[in-house]
Image (cartoon, rainbow, N blue to C red; front, top):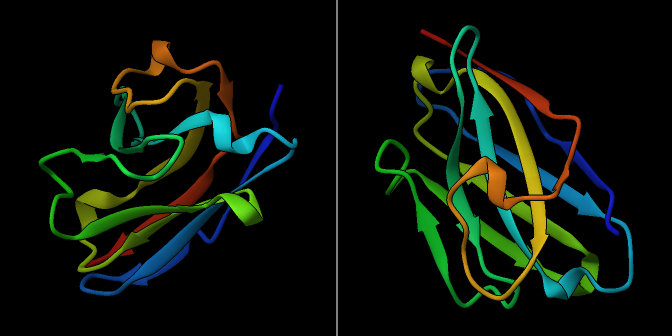
Length: 124
């Protein structure tokens, strides 16, 4: 079992940057694939980025490709989402999720463990 805690959200102007962190408990963090999801008010939760347990494989939604970077430090039990060139449409609650497995996963039902979320607001 793993517990996830997100941090790093906040209010930023369009064009700015934020780095989200997802800190995990447990000694087997390196066995979990991680995904970052976001949910805007009134909309479905969607994946924005995913990373394999080793970090060798990553995946991005088209809406964030070239602007967001997912990475992980298994020694620190932490996954990061660096968000650059933020746009107002990036405003949402951001969640990290984990599941055991080696590759990347794209759907919320693929993930078993979820954090509580962190809010990101991008002003125009």
